[in-house]
Image 1 (cartoon, rainbow, N blue to C red):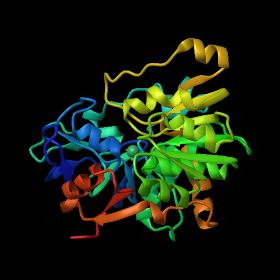
Image 2: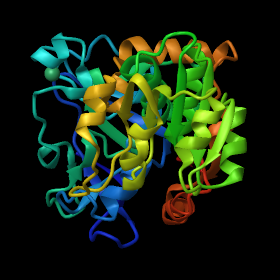
Image 3: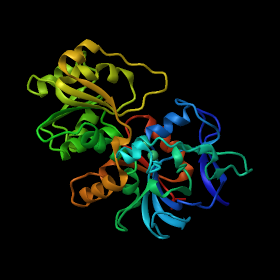
Image 4: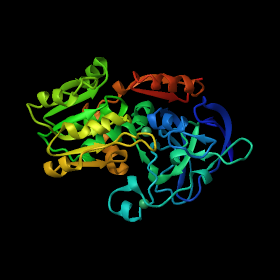
Length: 364
Ligand SMILES: [Zn+2]
Ligand SMILES: [Zn+2]
């Protein structure tokens, strides 16, 4: 056990508390990563607000990058000193989902309360999302990490572990977009902007961004949207049809948690189109759709977790895209903060105007 500093949630809806906590050494198959950057994702905020329940106290944080500082046995060939991205995708590698190429829906449970974290007093402390990355160090399974080039700044790299893979993966893997198809992306936030650039990379013909403000629609265009539609319009899908030359979209990517977006999404679809649910509404929230329309028009509604990515395949690809100037990362970061400022960074993210806020651990 060693003592590290972490931001701990002890009560839902209350500010996180910076505490000294205990971290176990990596066991078989695990590595310890000393973090340099962790981004704040809306999932962290939903957890901390109690939207999905879960054990308390807990350490959230799951979009991280750093350098390996210790390895357990059979740690997948990783070495101390390797720069890596840390993801929440803890996949066993052998269950039917993993073996079938869908590690994001691994069937082997992992008990995050019995993970490597304990409170300063030695009491149970949840390693939320199998990461617990609002902390100076994490101990994770080697299948959750991917080696990255030394030259890739860690603040940019951290974005690859959730927001970027979820958005780009939704366009490429989940929607399976082909060149020339038309896409609507609902929400131009951290994931939505990446869904937009994923659609651009996939060769989409027209990409319509839907969001609440003109400002966000302008940002969406910088990431590849060809048109913008205000979600506040009475029937925003009609404006999207206009942008798409009078027809519906081949795919609608829903990247927000707000239920009206789920209710409306099928309305944007053309014949044979698919709505991909990527956002994470609160538990118990329900959406509705008209089955006869989906059946008659051959449409589909499907969920996608973490962009259906295979991190060992997709993250190196996205690193190359970035280095070739084909994927934007720098432009996704709207603020850099220290761990001590995490509650301010979360408050800024909650305003909805931020893209990604990143905690840097070398800041005091
Ligand atoms: Zn996330
Ligand atoms: Zn598995």
